Length: 274
Image (cartoon, rainbow, N blue to C red):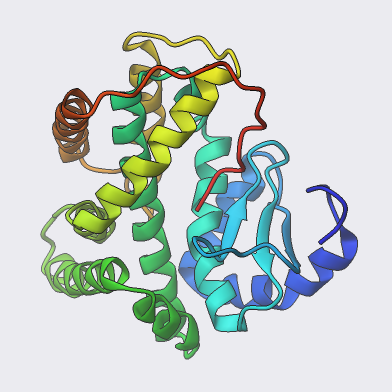
């Protein structure tokens, strides 16, 4: 990797073939187009030593660069890109800005929501790629684990129902919402991202970020609810009900296991994962 996390022309060239595959399907072109209209095209870079035991790619929250690991197979990298590029859109639409000011329970719930949204977006894109003859990223996404499998099954089943009902002139929630809810239903997702949120909350407090009571959550929800759900349809109103229930669950988890008092430490905030 280049020294630090700056723009690296060679790393961008290495990622270019993956980006070309990404925009070869309608869902990928839609998302890329939205990013172009809202801040310019995203910077995608592929270099060595990006991945570790927990991630295959990441969004650098400071520079907005999406990093992919050069050692991973192309299909794995492309599947990871389909997830991370949604985090890039979240950042540009103001979703990530409030999280540093959130109380722990709100940060846990917000992390669940952001990650489920990225999983649902990835499902739609890898499915679209497979429908266009590029099935490798979908197979890679499926092989990653139970969460991805549940998201794929729910999203693709809802897409089939959506297509049939749309043909009859009926209306129903966008199929991306089914994948979103399927991701949230996975205990592994909630447990692992709760741990991630707890670590980030401690680091935000150690770095001196002020904590707001409810204001940051409202700001986050407003930005998240306005996010495009993967087509030209915003998340349905049910999203707010789901978010409220998740916030209540997160509050119960934090009450059952409150954070320990921490000594002030000088730390660098981690890049936004995963």
